[in-house]
Image (cartoon, rainbow, N blue to C red; front, top):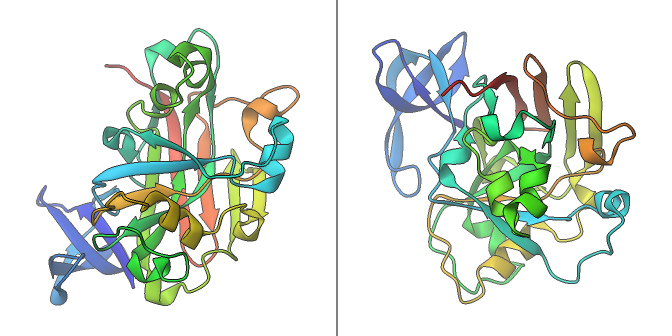
Length: 269
């Protein structure tokens, strides 16, 4: 099942599934506990993030070849940072470059597999961690490199948390239909050119290990979103560097999930 959130032609927000020919079947109830699929179908006017995240955890340097291209040693433990929940954006929504990132090109792409937690999770083992997953979606950890590094005082959060810097979608594939998250092809395409192409089998820490690590004496609540790291091929490591610019079209593709598509624009507010 593919779960999506959307705004319909009546300007109301719905949760749905079975997207086809511009319409989706409406879901009633709580997707984290009890819900049912109605016979009602609504036109999908605007895709929203598949969930409204309760919190966004992210893992850095989690692909072997990405660690190599940055010149950093493989981490012994997952590198954890966070993104502001207001950075979430939907499929086909513009990723907006803020005014503070315009003078020096710095906004980069990072295709990632994202995981959504379905129930309270604390001190879970890696072997049982996937039982706590609602589903998986495509994500892109958009990153303003200057703010991520020295501009953010050595903390990554500011450079990762600008509005629209966490596009998600187009939908959430439920865990029962995707039983091998550690063996998925993942690709990032910019203006028709493949920039990242890998497989989640190159991850240093598996999805189960990540969830287990984050849950150590910490309760992960339903709706927790976890970005699991990005493969090699990011823009700032290229020679010359490649950064996002207004008019660019960014596609994040993950096997068995779909294609998340976003255009780049300037934030006019």
